[in-house]
Image (cartoon, rainbow, N blue to C red; front, side, top):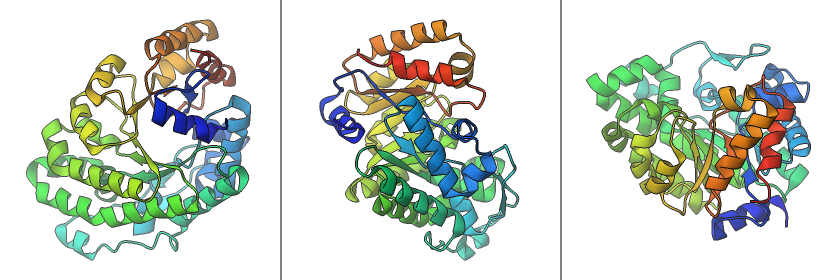
Amino acid sequence: MNKKQKFEQLLNHGKVDDGFLFQPILMHFAARHSGKTYREFASDYRSLVESNLKCLEDFDMDAVGLISDPYRETSAFGAKVSFPEETVPVCHNVLIKSMNDIELLKNPDVYESERTRDRIKAAEMFYKEIGNSVPIIGWIEGPLAEACDLAGVSEILLSLMMNPDFVKKLVEKVMKTALDFAKAQIEAGCDIIGVGDAICSQIDAETYRTIVKDKHAAIFEFIHRHGAKVKLHICGNITHLLPDIKDTRPDIVDIDHLVNMEEAYNMLGPDIVRCGNLDPVSVIQQKSREDLADIVRTLCSKEKDRRFIISGGCEISVQTSPENLMVLRTCSRYF
């Protein structure tokens, strides 16, 4: 049974035969592990794919991913993005300051814009290299996250209180690009589309229901209709959002270390796969291999016979030792 078949087995039957799937979020770690700079990883699809394939081989991961930074769509909309050598890309300008700016904003052609095209090419290269043997996870920005990328985080959070119509209008405007980008990645070979909307952990449940929930549900339904699964990533404490997230029908929800896994199971129910939730720094990076192994085994023991994927609560840090990351793989087997 190949890795893609194991993923389907998890979705359909709730568990796999030899333990838990292992699906860490790898960005800077993957670049460093393969001898690439972050600049190369984020700006050249070949470096991103080669880095992930090396990690696939070295750590026996159960999926590969296209995640690199939040500014693919932002760049396509026209923002200026630069690529420091060893840190995440930087966005240098805010495109949206008024309602009029939203009206003038044009949804880009994701095949023509350099950074969205680069990710599509990465999906094609992955599919050429691994075909249907390993799940390929594409990535798009969630609507509230993209609004923040275009208008600024502080501005969006203030507007949610003082001018919610501004946020609603911008969130609605970016939906087309989110759907276009998801569809392009699915057609290029992606089996799963990750939707990153981290800013949602900073809003209350009523605001989520009013501004974001229906948009998430529409994006997830669109992805399902086009033949792929959905992985929702909102880092931080999302306990207060979980009942509403359940309603949007994602297939996988990343659970950060700030969320109690038992509460997440009770709120999301047995059908949604929870992925996580080890603290990437204080646990995965900093614990000894022996202590980390005990923590992983304890987590896996609690999750036995449930739909669960072992991972960090968020991105694996670049300072993590390969030996510690391998502990997650080794200890997740045979439960």
